Length: 441
Image (cartoon, rainbow, N blue to C red; front, side, top):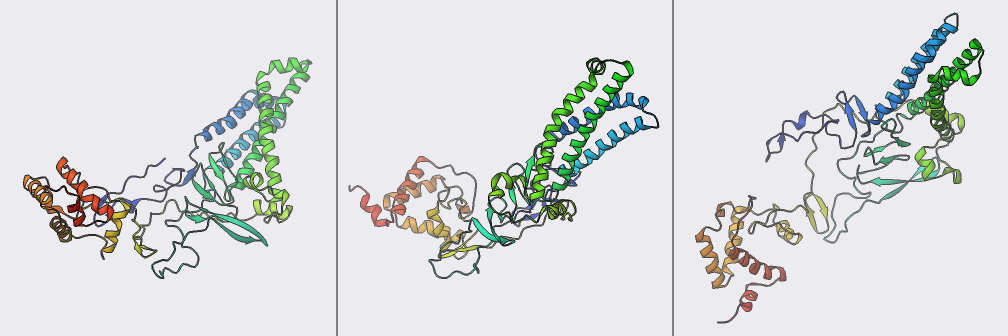
């Protein structure tokens, strides 16, 4: 899996980048997929299981060709024996190609949005200071072939999923006509690879039946040649026994899966819909009839991918501020910023003072003025303490008021002073409140 390197910023303040402009989509992909050959093949995060699937297909066919088909080449005349091995090899390669087409292509991933959509009826204006905050509805209703279908909002992809679309928790993508995530192929099964998935399962079933049948043919040839019983003939070819047992077990899995998907295709359902909605209890808005349903799957055009994984990543423009109740709030609202005076993290109560400023932040001179005003409102004892601390060098960064800096090391006297200064600010008191709380000498 490719790891996205951090962008190499030549100037962090200006936001210009060098390395990020050269990133391709597959390198900055936010899903859990794995890419090969520079984004030409896309797999699921469990692509390692694909090696096991290939082994379970190739290994029994290799045993069949060596111990069964090679012996049958001498028993059949007119090149019939060679055709048995050729068919087995060609059918195996055909099965592996279908497996690669199923596992290594985009199953129908919907590109996720960079920002959530605007609510319906929102024109971007703010009417008064008490405008309520607009929220996106979780569910919408759309009409499909005269039937109302509910679609849900995906928080991860920040979009409303189209009908028959679902978010795969394994691949972390929204997939069109999502059927299921198959661990044997290491990929989601969706709109763009369902046809190849069914053909792969069906061809694997035929391959199992082919090997199973000719293993019995070879046992029958031994019985006829040596005039012996079936049990003695089976003992003479243990490879045939192993293949018969293996293919008999396998055909129940792939054969049953083939029959189940034939039913789904005939009724135009997906595996997800069959287990989730149970269309047999209500009308299926996607059912077009058995013949048209099969035409849609096998003869309909394959839609192009909505993702160009080898394209360059487009730089997102700067996010504009979003209006909320009573003001205009920056998208970065909610992120902790360093307090200008005390070097602490600001809380939500401190944000109002930032918003009151036209530029959203205090300048250097305003920070100094604020400090001087607070000192003027202090009692003589507190001012004396501050002056002594300033002369002692407790604030060596006085020239950097109003900008972020490193960690602040403060003495216990300054911390005590900060706590005494913070009490009237939290309670809304003034400097007179500070003087009233001081003990009288």
